[in-house]
Amino acid sequence: MGPNLLANYYETAAMLIFGIGFTALFLSRNMIKKVIGFNLMDTGMFLFLAAKGYVEGRSAPILTDGVRSATAYINPVPAGLVLTGIVVSVSVTAFLLALTVRLYLKYRTLNLDEMLQRSRRNEAES
Image (tube, rainbow, N blue to C red):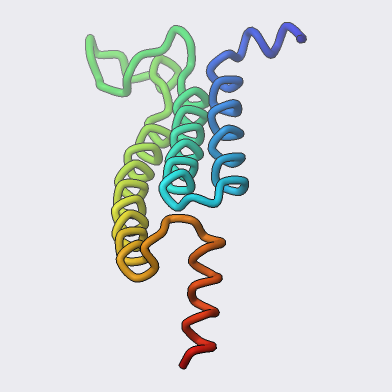
């Protein structure tokens, strides 16, 4: 491991969390595990954006003590993007969970392979 990997531990943790979520999303056949993987990917991205927006030694962009120099404050845009992303992520998660419930009620399983087999079986019977 290089020195940059240990110095940028927030970014490293963000990439690991994103990778775990990506793996869960694409390798799992269970719908709930896919939703969890999607949420882990979101969390990793939010951590990465927050880590990139933070600058050591600077403070939040709230004018205090008459300091008006932009170099004294961190950039507020990444924090705004993270907050917006969290709102969108919660909405998408609610939709995915509602879709999962509907699929479970129809096929009585959370496994995507079994859903596909039962769907084809239902089409053949019709």
